[in-house]
Image (cartoon, rainbow, N blue to C red; front, side, top):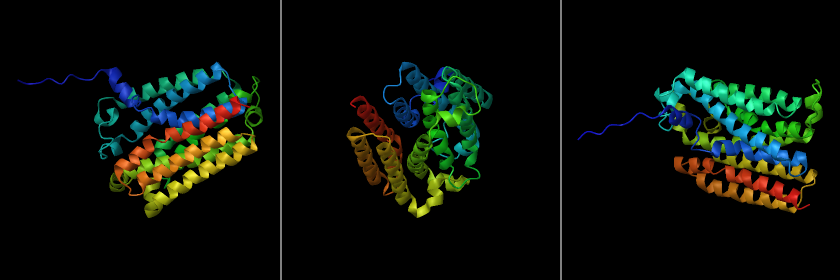
Length: 302
């Protein structure tokens, strides 16, 4: 008796393309964005902005997956973990993937249009960085730095949406985004460097073979030490900025919980085993949640 394997539906393929079953990616984007939104609004920012940034984060991360898989399709076929991605496997065409990515990005842009000009202007910059990132792996020794900017750009956007005016002026962005928002972005960039280096450590052997550039390859035997340094800079940066912004004990409880998770991640990655590095990456969103929870609770109990 022979068995018949039914073809997957287009919807199932599209959901696989945008990593619908792997929410860790958009959660890594979401928590620092919501932390910034709460800080900018000095507490609860209102349902409108919460819906805009939660839905926009999911949509933009999904659009980024479409662009990334198109850009990396020739590389991904040589990496065991990514060889079965829909575009790489030929189940979804390049045109389909780009069309889906464009629709998702447009939907996110429509959401941003309900905020203010400063947030709209920053969303255009965020989209440009998102489009550049997949190709930065060809010429930057640490492309994770570009990803760090892309994954942190929700921070200034959150400040712009919460503090910006409805007037269309050239000075709208500088007036709406205070200096500490950009410093929070820089601090968050180190977190992205930490968890995406863990991610790159999973595929290091395959990436070396196909000539891909990653932070795990560039850092070499200092990769584990660098990841822990990145965690430290991230947590120290948010702690200092939080203190300067008047956040108190509950915020620092959140920082402490996040630091404990970072220490645990060291035990997962110190042997550089693929399984441990991938587990550390997948669970990083809990670190971001700890910081957001600290911010939200501290502001709520003032």
